[in-house]
Image (cartoon, rainbow, N blue to C red; front, side, top):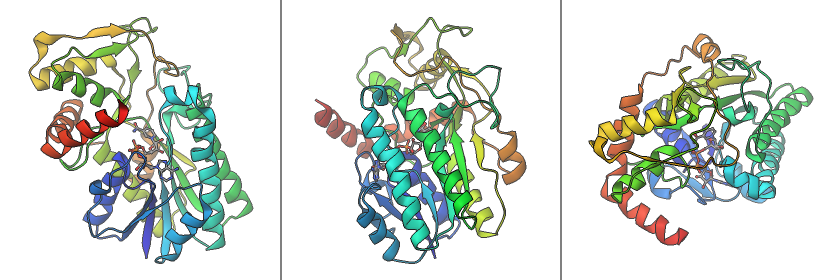
Length: 335
Ligand SMILES: NC(=O)c1ccc[n+]([C@@H]2O[C@H](COP(=O)([O-])OP(=O)(O)OC[C@H]3O[C@@H](n4cnc5c(N)ncnc54)[C@H](O)[C@@H]3O)[C@@H](O)[C@H]2O)c1
């Protein structure tokens, strides 16, 4: 029996595919390849190409082989873009989750791990958010993820056989394999790498936030550590364990954007180049740092990769010929 990964050809999903295969667990992918890449997924893993909002495509993916559980990552993810295109985000992230839940119910597939986000919290009140902190998202993206959590909660009330958890990722960075790269147009690591590859000074967006150095503070977690957390969630659900409805997945450590950029410049050997500051972007809260105590206790999961190792892994993957070629294609598509 396989686990179905929606969005499994994306940056995070394909790392989860790797983690499942390393543990000898069968996995199949449903992805529309809008931001994912077929080559991120090994050739012998089946990729069903289709949209998550398309009931027929989701049904076809379930019917192609027996499925025992689902990891649901497919969707749109940029808070800033969501401010300008809320309807697209609600369609992919809310309607897509509703369609998936319906298709799962029709087939008695009752194990679900959902990709949620720290963006569901919005600006924090204290130093660190726990899973019980208020959720006040500040972008349509964060709202769509929170509604996804509610849909799953309500469906599990109506259908108690559904066992589920939502993993609220903090900022996901790094590369666990040279084959898989974050090519995102907005995420911090690729933005800085892209500038450095062009010989330009990277930019820090916003220097007037109420934080110690004026730049945003985030909690960065390595993508391979995050993939391992999904594998553990699936194993625990397979074993019949009840999981909490949500878990923060981060390192519990706040790092400012300036600190990240300085670490990248040091790893790459470009300290002298420095960086510029640019105006704030929409939908970016000043500080988000999460407590990972609940997942550490329930999963026995600990994020093993530190900041420097995350930068080194990501930079190595960024510089492969395949990644460079993909960047050229992405640039041409964006132009
Ligand atoms: N990257 C982060 O820091 C982060 C943080 C919190 C939450 N998340 C969530 O994790 C998930 C995966 O993020 P990622 O960074 O790997 O992004 P990604 O864009 O690389 O992956 C998303 C995948 O979903 C596919 N997809 C998008 N819309 C789809 C649709 N309508 N139907 C079918 N497939 C679709 C894309 O082709 C892609 O392969 C997303 O749900 C995102 O919101 C990411």
